[in-house]
Image (tube, rainbow, N blue to C red; front, side):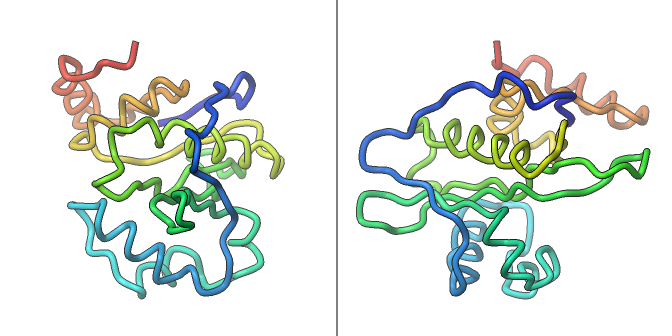
Length: 171
């Protein structure tokens, strides 16, 4: 999915008691815990963290966000990463968005997503993309609300998007 510009990111304030903070050394196990609890489709391991983020802690401090509850516990994460699409031009990437299951459905993903989009823009990207699975309908609804549109490059992708259309409630 792609957002062709990062203008007009919806303002989404955090509910009272919640905070956002940047990655700090030692957050690696927190990321693994959040992702492992929230992700039913991938094998989340410390090795995956290393593979995805290459252990560049200075870059992570600028790009990875943690959503914390009133007790200061990290309960969500999103990364304002970078990547390329088919044009090989650098583009911002919203990467590994997750909130632990017992906090999902409480309106916390919107401020986390807004902060990640703003961070991508602050880092100099004019547009952004993300990847997801059509099995993640609630996430897709969130991404559509944030102005991301499907990139449909194959017949299989077109058929998958058509199949989930009745379950999309982003408007």
